[in-house]
Image (cartoon, rainbow, N blue to C red; front, side, top):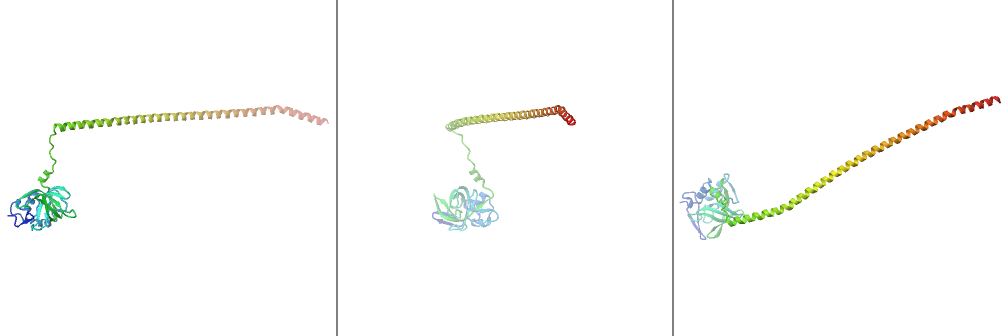
Length: 273
């Protein structure tokens, strides 16, 4: 048989786990090996050192991990249990063999009793209550999660909704559609207003551009007219200066004979006298 010693502790029947020599129902290591496919030999407590360098080990529960108990009390060679569900940071459910003599028990609650929440001390639920504290090494993590555990966490298949539920969803959808429509109308109005404002601003920009162009054209015309008027003034001034110079020359020419005549008369008088 796979068990050799039996201890009764607080009403709980504990059976030590030796290397498999019987059915897995009476041997915790045989059950854990068959369930997870892990390749470790020896009694339960020896799995922890044997796993070093071969499997990852740690102090956080995960689906399919193997919780390794230390030898303690009636568990002379320790114990192993497989995590079938992680309920919370300090509670898990395990499947195990021989925690109760010769039986496989599933979904048994185990709580973390360690002060540092590292699962180095746990309490196993039995007969509705969690019993004494049991020291543990930690968790060994097999490379593959058991298929039965994967199936356990698959999302349940949806059932066909009832007629009332369908009506409620339809009514809810109608209400949501109306609400979205009500929200959409102010949004459309705001978009139209914004588009109108942008169009108005574009029109103002075009008008301003045309006005600037007109002012620029008027300025160019004014500058040309001013330059033309200045040229005209300069020409008129030049013509007037030339006319004045001509008149002066004519007056000088007209005065020259009289001047010479006066000089001749004076010469004659000077000769007579």
